[in-house]
Amino acid sequence: MRPGDRVRIVAPACPPSREEVDRGVELLTSWGLRVELGEHVFDQWGYMAGRDEDRVRDLNAAFRDPGVRAVIAARGGKGTYRIVDDLDTDALGRDPKPVVGFSDITHLHLALWSRCRLATLHGPFAKTNDTYTGPASAESLRRALMTTDPVTLHRDPSEATADVTVDGTATGVLMGGNLDAIRTETGASLPSLRGAILFLEHQRGTGLGEVDRALTQLTRSGALDGLHGVALGQFLGFERDADDPTLGGWGIRDVLRDRLAGLGVPVLGGLPAGHGTNPRPSPSVPRRRSTQPPER
Image (cartoon, rainbow, N blue to C red; front, side, top):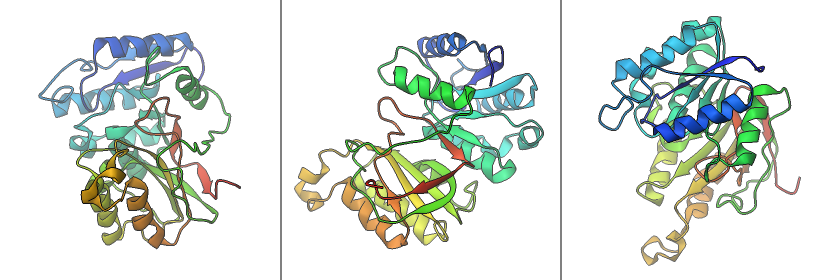
């Protein structure tokens, strides 16, 4: 993208606050971009940003507008899974443009790659001066959108998944995102993962069993057959589980090792991408990435 390009902020999931959107507009404008808002960004229907038909209408309007050069989600939450079947992927096939977001927006990433092979960006929502999306995260997003520099993620030893590593080297198409969204799309918009490196991140819901069930479902369904590697981002909210006597001393690292080691593919943990502070954007597809031991 270049200064002067138009970008559109949409809300496919939960409604954002006006303050959040204002910060996003300020950030994108500071990069020289011309920012527009989807018609229904501030609507609310239950816990979602408007009715299904209005949220998908905003998305499709952005996809069909040749002057819009990027589509950026205002926030995640819930509801994107309800509208992915009505996306105008033909429009994106004719006029590809980056779609940015994470969490519930993973449903968009998976559907768009599955149906029209659109490369998307698993990245932070557009905000500025925010305790979550700080300057480093914002600059990473700008570089991913507005330069041709390689997008590289480095292992962070402080992340909960940093010690979850299976030795080896792998190359493949990088895809994935939020674990719960990936599990939900099994049998629906989940593309084939053969030859891929699967990126996973997660924010605690019901506990370790939730992660265990999701990974077990993906394995039993055959979705992980032919996988080349796994890249683990941030898994948040599990810090005290190892001290819970009812869990037998297990924490999130133990569940991930137990479920992933049996796949027989390299695993690299500790990537600073997900629901934590200052997440770094990464291409959801289709750039090729390799997983390898941290010391290499």
